[in-house]
Each structure stands twice: as C-alpha cells, then as structure tokens.
Image 1 (spheres, rainbow, N blue to C red):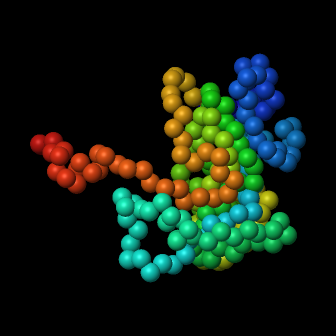
Image 2: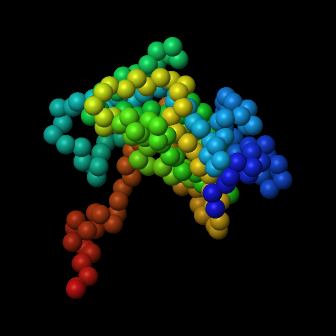
Length: 207
C-alpha cells in the first residue's frame, strides 16, 4: 500500500503508529503542509556532490572481478556550489545524490520516481529505485541525458519524488549502501552461484 499525504505527514511527525519508527528527512526545506508533499510522494532535491565516470584505458569493466578501488580509478568527485551548476551533456551519465538525508522506518520501503517534467526534456533519473526499510543516508541518483541539448543540473533543484509503501512480514536489513553522504559506485560481492555456473557445477535443466 502506497502511503498518501496524510499518512506521510504522520510518519514525519512520529504520531501514533510511527511513534517509535519515524520517517526522517533532513533538511525538509518546505513545511510538511506545503508543496513538497504531493498526494502520494515527497519531493527530493539535488545535492552538491557529483561522481563523474571518466574514460579509462581499461578494455572492459568485469563486474565479477571488479576491484574494491575501482571507484577511485573510474570516477571523479565534483562539489558544486548552490550558486553554480553541473553541465550534463547529451549521451553522458553522472551520479548525483539527494540533498536530503533520509532514514526510512523499518515498517516501510520507498521508491524513487523521476519527475516527468525533467524526463520530457531528456533527463532520466534513477534506474535502481528501491529504498529498503531502515535505510539511512542520502540516495544516490543515476542521471543520464538522453536528449539533444546540454542540461544544467543545479544543486537544490527538485530532482525526484519519494513514494513510501508499507513493508510487511519479517526480513533482515542487508542494505550495502547505508550511511553515504555523497554518490558512490559501490562494490560487488562474491557471487558463488555464478562461480559454480562457470565451473560447470550446475547443469541446465533438460527440456
């Protein structure tokens, strides 16, 4: 069930069912009775850090063998002031983050949705939209310009919407991207199933 405006406000205020399991969004620049709350979402703003992927002399990036230090080798961090902007050229990709630090309740999960007004001009936002229960940190945003004109990305601009849904049942908090305050590429864990597939230890099912 997606939470609508009234329940989102209750989660932010920590009232009743959210008393010991609040939703935190810091800073919440508009008051919770103002325009940053939609009918079933919360507007999020673009932060000041960008991680630009750079051209590399590597022939490929093999995710199975990706080194822990690959972010330093492949990316460049840029800090942009509020009175400036980052230019995203056509066909280019950059990682940004939300201005807001978010702590999700353990009873809720979130989904990131790009703003359609930006998408219609060629700015594609967030291709991995799930925010897990109990997540805390800023959200990394994958930003791509699929249009024909360079786009000015200004820190503080409205960039995406956060939808919140109830998460029921038991589960374990296994998120790998908690606590970050700037965009990150992340690392890749071992995949024992793929290793066994490569070694021929799993036979495909016969038709």
